[in-house]
Image (cartoon, rainbow, N blue to C red; front, top):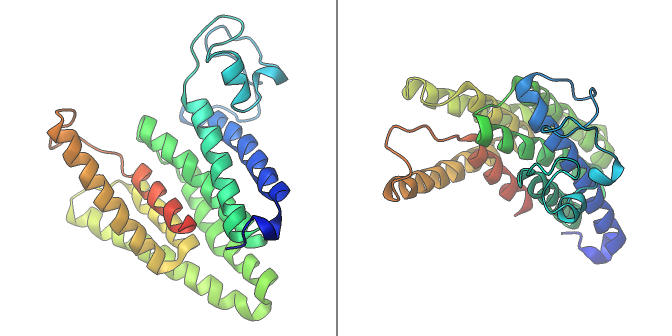
Length: 253
């Protein structure tokens, strides 16, 4: 672990600030991707009154606190997801900076973390894991891993890194694909591609550990929901949030 002493407190704060801004963009993506809307146009606006939002309305976390969780123009309640995603992404970026420093590996994993946070939200809110995220994510895991190896270890490290990423992609996607066949569709295609993406970043041991941890956590949450009367045996439970959380814990721990 690099520690604050090596990268400096300013480096950690800078990573957290980038995480806040990234989290704000992830909220925009979570709002617009399910509706097929452009991420560039129109400008950010209130979903209630349609008023375009200014700079003071878009400050991550701070705007939500100052406005007491409501639109300044029409009083519409804002989702708590907004500050939660912004704060979580800032914390993740800061922890990644502490562990990996402000180096290519840290930046690569920060992109990975941002993808996982967005997928967590999309699957939790709408059972939606778009190929628009997982397929480029696989390419980023393989190609980005090779680029990081080139920058840190030289040309000799590229082939092993790419090979490990491809094995992870196959192990992650392949293992869930087999479970999909065994369960006759009980596992979604989105989950298969998500674990393939995770494997591309973490390699095959990481992919299998993430699958084990996510399956265990999902089972415990499902049983707790059934015991509490909130779920029935055949109720679907989105698996993406468990895979995403397990992958983030693997990276940090």
